[in-house]
Length: 551
Image (spheres, rainbow, N blue to C red):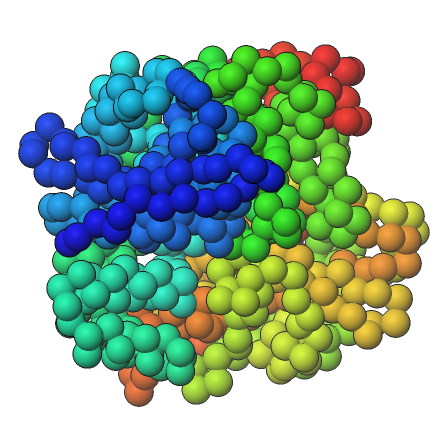
């Protein structure tokens, strides 16, 4: 493939940023293509490296400022096509290839013309994980900014509560498959995938398209691997985990658990990571984090003073007020029990959230695979984020439990977890939960967090099921009410459970069974587990503005 000629961008008044394409030879002889943006002013400069599979010209501008912006602030910015993508040679093998290629890229970047030998890495999602992988503990970045990523290919990339991400997994896999078609010159295959994504038919035929156009692809492998199978979990060198690290997460990002795990691993390794979690989805960052990220790199690579916005080791954006706050230090959170006289699935106002000691009753709901309950918004939706779900709660196959109006404001922070006894009449079922806030008039039912669990047990046997919901921080006002909604499906966010004990991915089919779920509410509980273990690897608490050392 022929590389384009060098180009130039005008930025910051009369300053100029130049770019050129350059190859890098890996240890096995494969050449990786990179695009390098450099300032017009005399160097040398520190390097910012991003390694990604989507085309170096795009450079993740769906979430970040263009590389020319970073170059205009005194950095040599390198965006590299990973192996088997873009104009790079070799075959794309997913994350398994990145440890060796990542180490080679760090060594190469330090020796680039115009480089001062300092290297920082940035990027989100796939680009986030490439920063963390190296097969040489000495070939690591001097600092890094992984965003919305994780190390565990099962829990951080493909499976929630024992069920595969269906819509997200298929959509991402088909994007990679279309790139493979483009690389091979298969225009008809590319158009077939594009039509399927645009019409929504990929939800039905997506797995077949992957089998046809990318049979060895990582996404197809994930969708076919049992949730309890042998999944890779990547382990960065401890030296890398101790490097200065800016971790970026979002309340409605499916990889948030991976970011929180990275924070904990870094602290356990002796690192002091900086954490920011915003009211963001995977690709919508509400104005971006570029100013913060630039300040991080300027401090660690250009020895500029630490700016005020980076003084707090951890800050969280309240999803309700959109104010930034320090995480709570050892604060107690309320616990609720569930109660119903049996009508919570037919009358959305009948079920109650109250003190666990007062939980009582039972409720039966019926999951009909012909009309599965839809999943909307949240962290697994194609429409991610908070959303109105009052119409969903009105369905007869959704059981709702609502609190009394709050007597005072309430800050919800943590990882919501439901414990409930469930009996089913089939060998397998799904339990999908949503946590919402209702205004005083019930005109708004705003969904804040979702989660699910896939269960296999003997028909007629009751067992206590734990459902982990997506972490959150939200403020409720006095007079508002909290609601927990339960259903047997969240289509197409996860595949519809067939009820027969098997786990075939995908939509409902003629073999899917009707499933009756009976909830024994006695002893049930909804609680908020701590978001961060603030004792991990450090002794300080956080003050109200995130400063360390405030008790």
